[in-house]
Image 1 (spheres, rainbow, N blue to C red):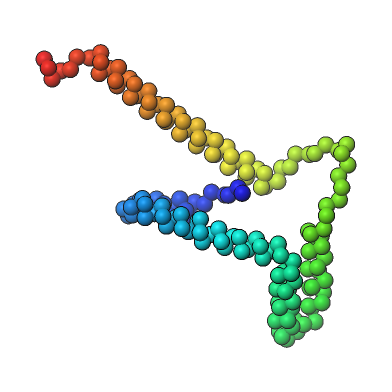
Image 2 (spheres, rainbow, N blue to C red; image 1 turned 60 degrees about the vertical axis):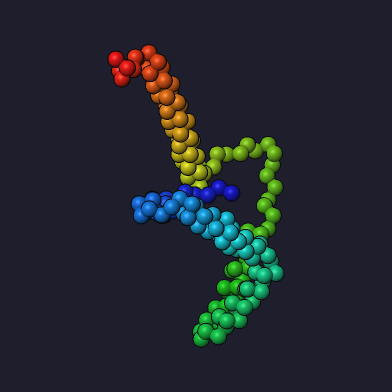
Length: 155
């Protein structure tokens, strides 16, 4: 699953570094938070959203609770009818697409954002490779320079 960069998480990392929190304490807290807590919350959410029986039960409970609000019970039948039509629209099978029609480019906000994020990631990767190569070249040059120049301490 593609995730959007979270600047608040980056800020938390910077602040932990600024206040001298040890790396392993920050790393373990991040690992527990992301790998255990966040993953289970997302899993329960996705399972509950995709479970039609659970959604029907939640819908019936909400209708029952909302029926106690004075004046709202008269709007419930039209509201539930609209919700059911939206549900059927999104849960229904998409209409078949003829094979002779070419797919058009999708210039939605999500595709543009994903492209920007991928470009940023690729730029980051190129910078890491470039910095590593420059560091290696500097080590090689320092080693060659040390071999060429006589040591001034022996003179």
